[in-house]
Length: 213
Image 1 (cartoon, rainbow, N blue to C red):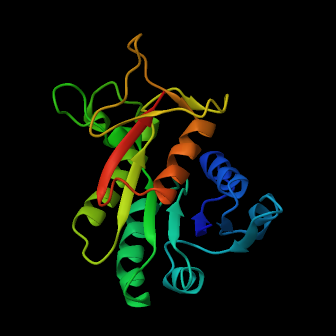
Image 2 (image 1 turned 60 degrees about the horizontal axis):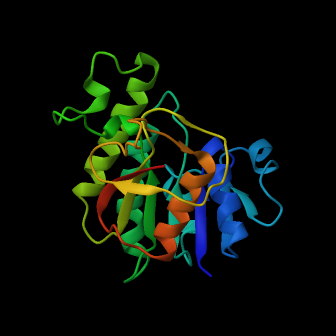
């Protein structure tokens, strides 16, 4: 059993990750910035208010944690990069073995077959570009950090949503995972499995990966 803090625990992906962690018997602190969202969290999780971009929140909630999951949704401000900066600043000050960071990234940070970042392509959805570029900045923060352990997990750039918990997935590095039909995608449920698997058996220290069915 691990002590896991999940920021953004009531979001579409965060809720599935929270459910998966609870299902496996982990001690979960589920965090949202507003009390109204805290009330939506599973009863078996310890729901609390907090903000991953705020120093005092991270200091308070990460004290005894073994892993911190960042699953916050995009907002108007650059929340992902600010979260990364706050974590890499605060966590090394908490002890010799700070919690593992698992940051839920964006499919827009992945690359096409020519090595071009998907978020920079002309056909990338305009409504998602700002969030993807913020996630790219967060990835740069982690890559330049010292004295922290982190893994960024990017979902597929499309076909991500609620669905069946198949219990299987495949991993990739810089390019989206493609199935036998040339399609990309994964359910929230299987994505959550991949996230908790990485905490239970860390295999991708200090790098970005992606997953798909």
